[in-house]
Image 1 (cartoon, rainbow, N blue to C red):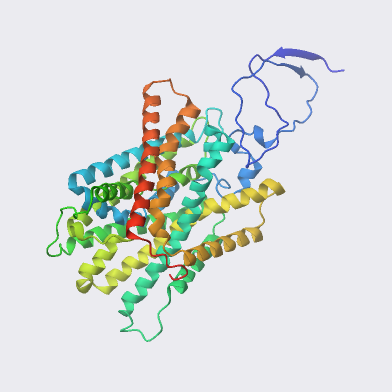
Image 2 (cartoon, one colour):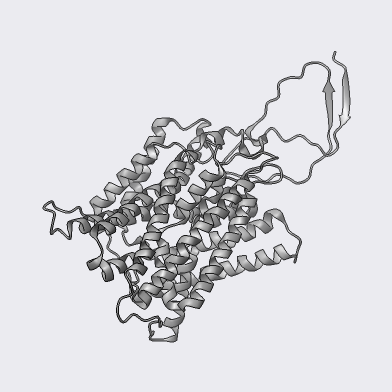
Length: 502
């Protein structure tokens, strides 16, 4: 019989190997560890059976290796920059001049700077919460929320916002992309004056955009593989933002423009207008729901944790985002003042309205083409989050990788569903302030602060504790105000609910 020695390892306990992995039920590890006496034999040891829950950070977790978000962890700082920029710059930024028409130069710039700084701080929190001290990686926003708030509350607070900001964003991209294709056709054909063919209907334009988006999605299996697509999205976003504000300034201001806020009928209308303008500014920043997923594509080790590469990528990305958004807001307000049309793509419509007669149709057509390409690339990032959730459901039950044919089917079904919703609710963009108030605002400005307190447990009443409690509570308060203001605006101005009439 082999000689045995007993060694007391003190606090170094072995993990429980009886637990089965599950992506649908996240559990928190106990912070207390008990002393155990471990026998050491001089004879060859038996082979240990290690379950996926024992593999720190999911690096060796089979399910992570099967899923689109974490299938490849070979990303770099540059790929992270491409993803952040492609997902962070959107057409909602074109509404910023409208907010400035309410606040004016000084307060508009102050509020935009405050929102920019606040969301950058919550990004810093998320990036540093991605990886725990034990090495566990939280590569999905819901996973981190469940770890911080518990399974029930975490899922209740985050599942709908994350799915809306991912799947709902894909629906809006179909509406925007399809509508832009229709504008492109009208511009190049001069409203039918130079084209004999029958122009495409709104539904046909939506279908064309959706087909292109799904074809692209079939070519890339995971988030890291679409880095080049995100690079194209980054270039197009920067180009169309620059072209729009430069064209607005270069063409000069229309006659009789004013920078005075438009007079409103009552005090309630004044406060409602202020809150709606503030909501435009705070909703101009997006991408927090995919920031952990993007960081999940980066490699990590004790010597080189992923948060260092990721924060470098975030810093460089948001310098470029600021260089796009601030000129767009200030330049658009300078060019059109309070004559900015209050609609989706406001500054883009202002260019057509005030400068369409003296602007080359090829320049406008180029802007439209760039916007369509940008929408196609952004669709891939937000769609990947939905694909990942669908495959989690399959792999959790089958305990195997999702086959290629099923991935194709999942993407086709998702494309068909988003197309149907876009056709059924082409006015979804008009509901963005209302839905964004209770989805995007807390997820971006409030939840990261509370998750930091729950996970990091900073000193009670210390600087970090007070800062995060104050920002988190104020973020929830703003969320309620924005929802109330958006609901009031819909009640007063009504909603053009053109069901199935894009």
